[in-house]
Image (tube, rainbow, N blue to C red; front, side):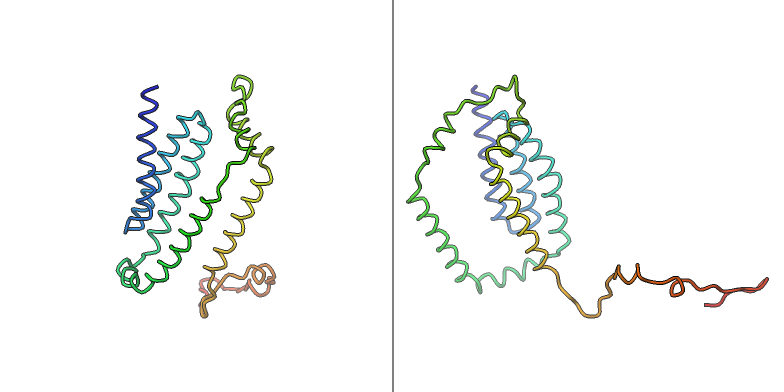
Amino acid sequence: MMIQTLAFYVFAAVTVVSAFMVIAARNPVHSVLYLILAFFNSAALFLLMGAEFIAMILVIVYVGAVAVLFLFVVMMLDINIAELRQGFLKYLPIGAAVGTALFAELLLVLGVWTTSPIANEMLRAKAPDLARMSNTQALGQLIYTDYLFLFQAAGMVLLVAMIGAIVLTLRTRPGVRRQRIADQIGRRREEAVVLVKAGVGEGVSS
């Protein structure tokens, strides 16, 4: 029990420090690496809780796909760090005003925070018998039965965010040739194939 408690505090401390370094690091590549470290330690915390399925999903999906994709995107963007630092003081008042407003909203939310009686009942609820139901089955029943509508709502929010990111980054540039699939499919044989009859010993000039 002492080893589990010590491991919990070690993994939790590394997770908090890594999460802070994600937003505090000056180099975007270092931020992504700290994010991967935070994911690994979060997976270790889930293992201590007995949720091995969530831990493996966190490592496989977020570390193996999402974080690595972030790393490749950041490395290909070629962000000019010096130029970003030059505009820091210019936008400092606006950033400070937005940060102050968000901090005030958090204080208001915490000031009126109350614990729901349903939450207390759920905390006192008996855990499922792992001898008759696996961890993955219990998690699926909880997500797709008790919180089905919230799960679908979260999926819709992510879908809207993905569409918004595509719309914001899509640019129409003049002079750039793009593939037109409809024109390629609708092209006739006479427009694409030219039959040339060449004699013996003669070549075809372009």
